[in-house]
Length: 322
Image 1 (cartoon, helix red, strand yellow):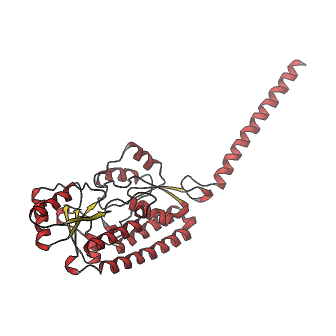
Image 2 (spheres, helix red, strand yellow):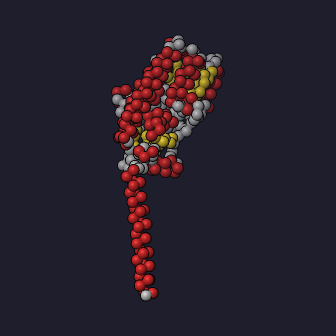
């Protein structure tokens, strides 16, 4: 009798265990069926995107909307030309569903990382669909294109479309949303472009000389009819010497330039040396303000967005040179 009870207890025990395991598998299957793979925005899960610079991150936020959570690796005042990825950055990139970067060698010290990750997940250079004949190729930049394309709004619109297409490919269920967001943002960029042209027109033609710490405003100058000079080259990784300072001082004196500009992501010491050099030559030139070149402003400020940054630069330049 005792033997029969023991056998019956063992049978009930194994039956219960089997039912528990079956319920667990069923629950997991339901989750996988009703939810989505990690990184898609279906099932209320946001796409996890990582962007390098503030400009690129802001672009992805505008196109992705609430379907995409965006982390930017480089914050205000950070120089992308010199930036080296930290271990924390590598972890963010590894766990992302999609990566967006500027390209055109802006993030030169991260190039190998992008190549490695491209085999694992979408890794998108937002500038890759800009027609090559629209890109500047300065002699001093060793055969590379100028990467500062965001200063020509007509070129940055290509980046909007590239981000839109990449998000649609990753998350086709929300194609209509990404298309609508992109269209709205493109209209805002058209309005910004019109504002810039109207404001720049207030500067007398002979005064449309933009002198900055490094040569980041080439596309800006071409788009808005301004002569641009930088103490350093396209990349802040380039060294400048006494001769460079002297040449810039001569330009200021000869052309009677009233104001030059510092940049938020570049040390002001070099520009201050130019101001002092002009003063020693009997020409007073002032620092007309701080421009945002390779980085946006602080978060939760107008300058923390691409449009706010661009408007700030326009207003600062016009105020100083008008």
